[in-house]
Amino acid sequence: MKKLAILGVALMVTTFLQAAPALAAPVRYEAEAAPAVCNGTIDSNHTGFSGTGFAEWTVNAASTGTATIGIRYANGTTTNRPADIVVNGTVVQAASAFNGTGAWTTWASKTLTAPVNTGSNTIRVSATTASGPANLDFVDFEVAAPTPEFQAENATISQGVVESNHAGFTGTGFVNYDNASGSYVEFSVPITAAGSFTLEFRYANGTTTNRPLSVNGTAVDFPGTGAWTTWQTRSVTMNLQSGNNPIRATATTAGGGPNLDKLTVTMGGGGGAPTAAQLLAKVTACSQISNGRYSTDSETSATIPVCQKSGAVFWKADMDIDCDGIRTTQCNENTDCCFLPDTFCHSSTDQALNAAQLPYMVVPSPSSIWDYRNFQIGCGTVVAIIFNNQVLYTVMGDTGPSSIIGEASYASAAALGINPDPSNGGTDSGVTYLVFQGSQRVSPIENHNNATNLGEQLARTFVNNN
Image 1 (cartoon, one colour):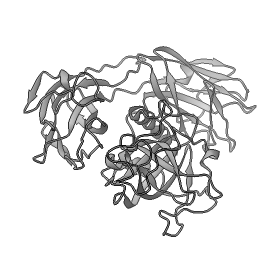
Image 2 (image 1 turned 90 degrees about the horizontal axis):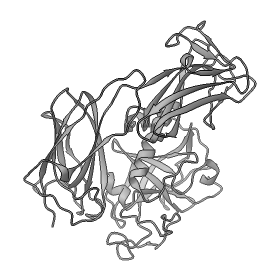
Image 3 (image 1 turned 180 degrees about the vertical axis):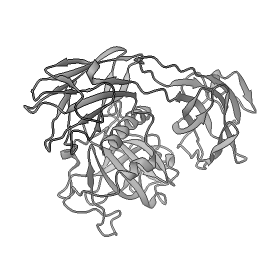
Image 4 (image 1 turned 180 degrees about the horizontal axis):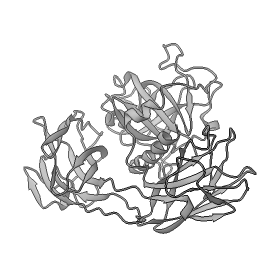
């Protein structure tokens, strides 16, 4: 039986600016550590929670700027348990969906942003139905801090020169790589907590030829910007360690590198994850890479192409429900006419994936239409599923028919507010699948939090580079 209601948690956050600020991760506040409970209980009878229990709450936060609030919850029913999310008396999300997660032991995350004031702020999750809200485990809370920037002219320079003869630079100048292969600019970046970061380079390239740089061994393209006074940015996501991190950008061709203005480093993807609208704005046009097109179902005509942008492929389709893998109450031979007890991708313990618990998506099996294996995509590749102004970060977890596209797991549908029932669920349209290319994979594949963290970083890089 679900026990409910609203719990008060006081969160105090202090930010400050240094000349060369180090970067840290968001702060996590466990619900059971709250100083007071209002009309609710602290329980630990459902496994999978973080900390020593779970609760339903009101949170009280203090800082200045835009706060990113991540709410971890479970809803073991099949019915949405909506709640108003109120910040300082203003409803920032009315009747926000807390859809069924498949089981009380299956946890999902909801992320939102809201302005907060200096001093005391109130953040409240208030149920809008008699059933109350979902079980709530913890809040991740972060206020956007000033973004640290590192001027190229102040870095360590080898075979390059500092100049100021092209307008539009920041600081006191920029670095000209001076047409030398092997020339480099090396920044020293202080980090307070290890993690994944977005490195954004501001540059100009007045030629029509790409001038690539090797950034700590990772190749990054710097195409022409049209003029030496036209400045653009290129980004790369990279894991950094606690302490000072040398970031060396080395020219790999005889033309040297571009003119380099500065490096901006942000935790986890540059000032917060992109919104659904920001991602969709980058995939309005299709550069088709598939040899043909896919159907959404066996009885429909083939109208869906696979398209490509810098760093990702995408398609816009429907969502069918994949319930294959580990047998659960939601996914078995009785609930799904086409149930299979296996998935193409396996967990870290070499078991089939759990479709009722793990958000994942399905790619078509390799065929003459398209072969995902040729595009740096495989088990554990991060996928952003965009639906109804929501972004859900998942992994590639299974393969499907070679001529049909548009499918995701029971848990993916539930998290997006789509009917997850394999017999009558899914949605006929409106779903965008953005599949990030490259060697980075979620490990272990069954860790959804890792998928979300990496997905947000890759999504920010995608927005910056397109």
